[in-house]
Length: 200
Ligand SMILES: Nc1nc2c(c(=O)[nH]1)N[C@H]1C(S)=C(S)[C@@H](COP(=O)(O)O)O[C@H]1N2
Ligand SMILES: [Mo]
Image (cartoon, rainbow, N blue to C red):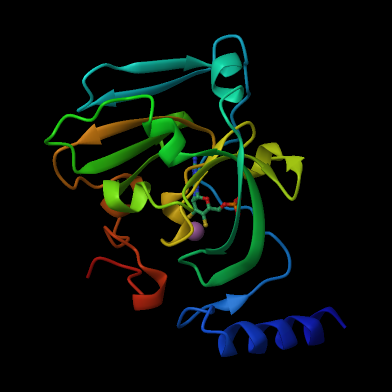
């Protein structure tokens, strides 16, 4: 039953041009990460915007979570081959965060930092798309710890290794530099519709 429904939805998404090449649709939500799930400590948690900004920004959990909230409906594509459609995210838009800092003119790239030294790189132009969101909620509920509670980034237009779970900050750079997966062979940009899976 589930598998008929899955195939049906997959056909629909392919016809709509929303299923990238080499991907298959999942109705479930796989959990995928390296290392263990970090413990959230709200009193010491801090979010930093640093690197090529005129002035560093540091936000406590209380401050971060009281910033203006928005919603994004978007698809999610994992480089390992699954796509999950129509995710409903709630949180802080990247554009809203960036209203609170002044970029230095040389800033071109963003290095996203998550707990346990997870990093991912993307151009500022992708980071600043209106669909990039620091999500605290999925489907109207707080994220589960497996999926990044209390906060994850979601960059729907790139493969999901850019969408750091347990995100703690961003660093502005003047150049493209590999994050964890990019360093380990995944494509530096990672456009699912161009099937940019690996760097070779
Ligand atoms: N901190 C952290 N974030 C991460 C990862 C990770 O290993 N650590 N894996 C990425 C990859 S490859 C994918 S596909 C998605 C998976 O998100 P999910 O577990 O919520 O489905 O998280 C991304 N964010
Ligand atoms: Mo992934």
